Amino acid sequence: MAKGEIAALKEALCNQNLIIKKLYVELEEEREASATAATEALSMILRMQREKAAEKMEACQYKRMAEERINHAEETLEVLEEVVLQKDLEIESLRFQLKANMQKQTSEK
Image (tube, rainbow, N blue to C red; front, top):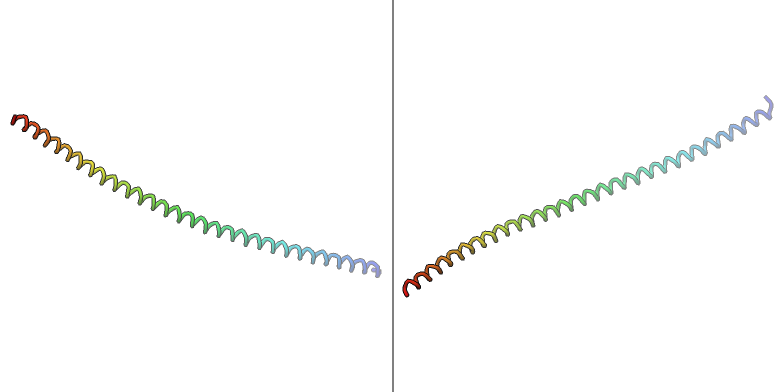
């Protein structure tokens, strides 16, 4: 082999090594970018899971409060219906007494 060919082969080898180094640098940059993207995605997933859990807890609290209000309203309604029933009975009793008194007064005349 001639010195010129050896020099050309050495130059080609150096060029190949430079290309390989550049490719390794690019590969490492891509790995870092992938790792960063994965970390960001995982962080976003975790944040969204926390938000979902907080929203679910808040929804459960509102549901419980609404159920308590409904139960209270139903109990109040039952009490009021009982009071109305008692008042209706009192009114009927008073009407009966009134009729009896009116009949008594007319029979005394």
